[in-house]
Length: 92
Image (tube, rainbow, N blue to C red; front, side, top):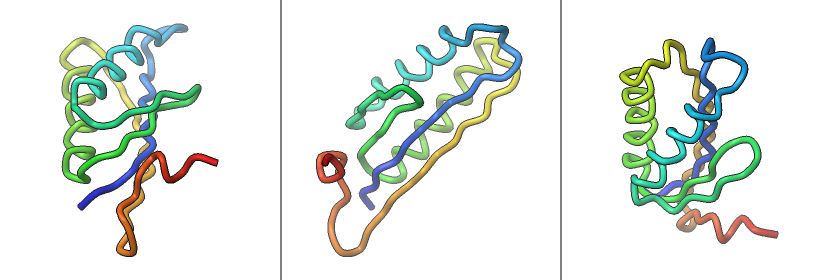
């Protein structure tokens, strides 16, 4: 099933700056092969629903393994039955 999503990874307790952790999460999203578009508060992704969910799990596993103690991720998912959802179809 194809889907679009907005993913926002929020490291907690990593200090004042979380740039390293956010950049690492973005790097993992890029490596996933999903279509991605970064914006000020997160990353929009397009691809197979299972792959989107797997990359969210991977972000958590890798960041925890690299020392991030607490991580909250907000995911907005969209799936449709009338057509294939795309990021390009959402542009105004």
